Image 1 (cartoon, protein in one colour):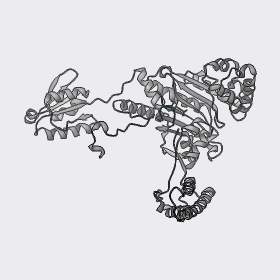
Image 2 (tube, helix red, strand yellow):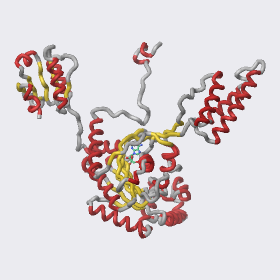
Image 3 (spheres, helix red, strand yellow):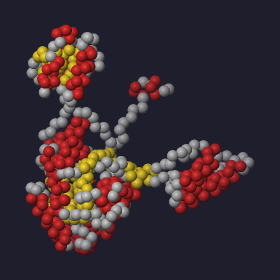
Image 4 (cartoon, helix red, strand yellow):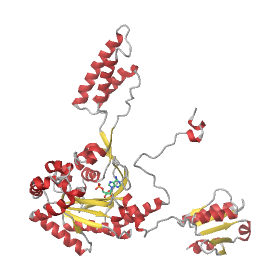
Length: 509
Ligand code: AMP
């Protein structure tokens, strides 16, 4: 039975994939308001928008986010790209054509010309000959040739048809890739770039944590690492929070040193963590990290470790080299100059080598468990790590749009809605052409106009206008056409007036 012929209860229903969601009106109005506000704040600081693709080579993220992180290890949506013109293997008769196509595409570079691919296509041909031999034996069946079939498909699978591609889990890697690719370092001054868009991580969905979520971020790339750059970026975020009227938030800052001073601190930290009276009190994860990545112990959320972290462990800010110390002191001075309140948090660390000096995070108590609104920091070594010119420094942040929206809704200060300005209640065929014409005139003047596609009884039209939150109902019936006077009703107070067409625009202003 065709799907459409089944009763509704039996028809297959589609739902959004777990961890993803639809953003519908009227909520989308708040999203649009927020994005508009963020753009306007960032543009006032002279940031320009960059739009990068949603997918990139997997290797780009593995390298920049770090192959050992959860994001890269467990959370990326990756798939193999496929060349054009390679039809999937559907039946036994296709085997020879398939192998022939693979060889042709290997030669023309349409599939990766790696040594492994070359070898595996060679082996695939041999296994195909073995399979042919087995099938030609008298009385051969699928069962008697299954060993050769399995071997054949094993090698079909082993051939890499294209590059591994990943839906972006974050956008800094893409921005830096674009910066290098388009030689933005040759443009004058620092490059100040911002982006808005969806990111993808296969995380366990919960409130405030999605598999497709939205980030707004900004990056400053250039030869300078002046603390004023860091402070201005942070100030910009606080201006955005202010515009959104989110008052309850904490800005945490820290400096995590550089390649000169961090290794010594890490050793000091490791030595402290190894002390039996401390080691015994650590959880399993932290015990492991003492050897692999002791810095990560600092951002552990385990309740029983909190006292140790707060009171017993050395703070990186007290072990900075002279340059990093000066940088950090200047950053704090710059923040004070800009009247940006901050809290120092020795626990704010990053696990990767290219992160340097300033790190920051903004949390909000109104968000519950997933309380991080925004995170950022300096990544002076990243451009070089991704093959770019030497000496280019960078700093950036990414804020979670989903969580900002939650925080705006919790704060209950801003309500973005899109009420209809004018609802046109037209009655009778003679009124319709005027209604269509006036709808166009009003829309050209940027009014939001609802024009019912079919005639409605007056009472029903009024009800509908009321539900749509319309400010005015423009009434056009036989009388109005005859007298060339429109009737306009102000829904808030029910006041009704007669006006001419010429007066309409003026009246609505
Ligand atoms: P990150 O790129 O992990 O530093 O995250 C930056 C910000 O993005 C966080 O502070 C969150 O506000 C937001 N964020 C990260 N992951 C998710 C997610 N799975 N769902 C919603 N927001 C997220």
